[in-house]
Length: 73
View 1 (spheres, rainbow, N blue to C red):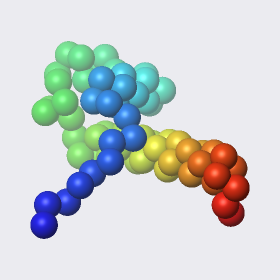
View 2 (view 1 turned 90 degrees about the vertical axis):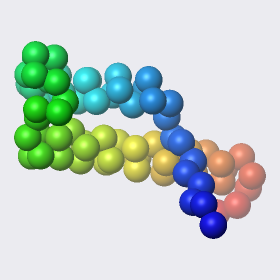
View 3 (view 1 turned 180 degrees about the horizontal axis):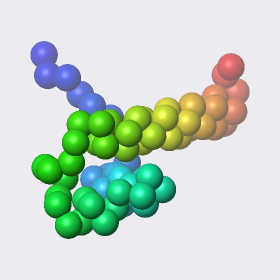
View 4 (view 1 turned 135 degrees about the horizontal axis):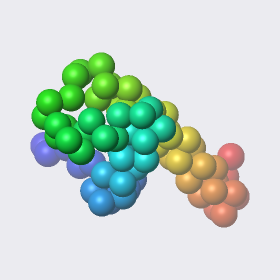
């Protein structure tokens, strides 16, 4: 059985989000000059970790909103 993945954000939004986080970490210029394929695992992991944390917050907010609208807690 194929696994179905629900997308929280479109690919364009995710890419924009990655670059915003890279700006915060001060590595956007390096990404633009060297490309993602030449980034270290640590640098990519830092970006992914921050994205993951932010996406969990979005999922919780959406779940809370859904429960409030449907009267279930």
